[in-house]
Amino acid sequence: MLTAATGGGLALTACGASAGAPSGGPTTGSGAAPASTAPVTIRFHHRGGQPGVGQEPTLYQEQIPLFKAKYPHITVLDEGFTGEDFYTKVTVLNAGGSLGDAMWTSVGGGGIYNVAAQKMITPVDPFVAKEKFDLGQYYKGCIDGLKRDGKLFGLPFKSHPGYAILYYNETLLEQKGAGVPDKTWNLERLLDAAKRVGGTGADTFGYFPHTSHKSILAFTRAHGGELIDPEGKKSQLNAQQAITAINWMYDTFHKHKVAPVPPLPQGGEGTMFTTGKLAMHRSGTFFQNTAVNQVKDQFKWNAIIHPKGPANVGGSDYEIDAYSLITTSKQQDAGWQWVKWITNQESGIRLGEIGGTIGGRPDVYRSERMLKDPLRKIFLEAMESAQSGRPVYNTRLQEYEKVLQDGLVPVWQGKETPNKAFLDELNRQVQVVLDLPLP
Image (tube, rainbow, N blue to C red; front, side, top):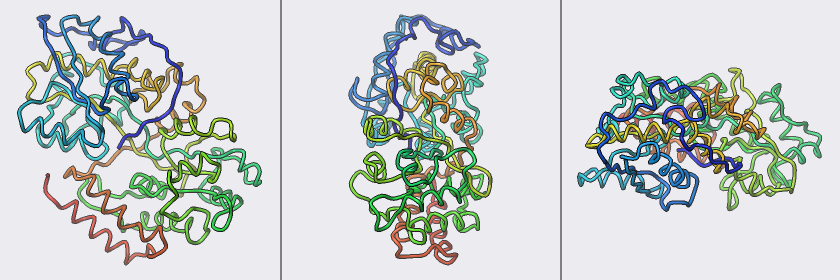
């Protein structure tokens, strides 16, 4: 699931840029015009709803006229749906034979794998081969993450490295004599700082590990493990590395008592952090925007790659949104031009300048316009060391995550302990989901 992030200025410099490499980058065939220049209209489906409201619809309203100037024979019509309804809406359109030509897809929720398995979207490999289109413009982890059964089902629209970031209240940590996080910190040093701030019974808490599937995965990877096997078919929740990771998280709540026990107050750990009640918490690049807008000048805060665990990594995971071509489209050539355009460098940079997660390309993460923000240097480092995703093969990621997360709620609340027997049983329940057929 990809969430919004970060903020910045509002400079518009895309006019006249080529579809594959704006701002003077290499074209590598990406600016090639469609074979026909006869007038054509394409429809693309996206999340975000009303134009001009939110990061992505704002980008589309900027980029559609610029695309039209480059390709005057192609008219682009956008159809936005609210994020929670998106896949339901496109599934209904597909059943009625009224899908358009291109659509937003995501690794989050297993969305792209599901619509690929249903043959709702088509591989883009033939277009890549025909143009010799340079996939090296995107992070390899993003390209790999958009493949199913060896076929590429879209181009990366935006990406971030998962729950790889530690946000911290520098003012509070210094007041408590806990020190300020740096690259030498590991999980033990993090815990020491959290204890110095306080926890249960105090006005503030030292740390919140986050209890989503993505955070559990990051901690498991920090301990050298994985939650599922490379094929995405077998759960490894009861392997020793996962057991150790979950027990480390459990101890922050119930042994060391530095983390607030769920359920959290309204607004969750984000509000606790922005109101000065939480010194440190694990999150993604997307939280920057919240911190900028809500902390203001209350205290000094910053972020760093999350401290490493015994496996010498902090834990990360490619989160990717994409644009894909619809199988039934009669205008796939024109749709391909739009897919390339909306995933090019300029679109990726503008996403960040509008305020949100940015494009899944090195030339976006490394761009001077992005790196004007010091935190973007941290995010760049996290992105370029991000660990590859492991999709759930049967595409039932939402069901898998729900069983896993709901099953661990009693652990975080202190009603159960995450011993081998408990995690053996939860692993069995998770495996039941992984054994289900494709939806």
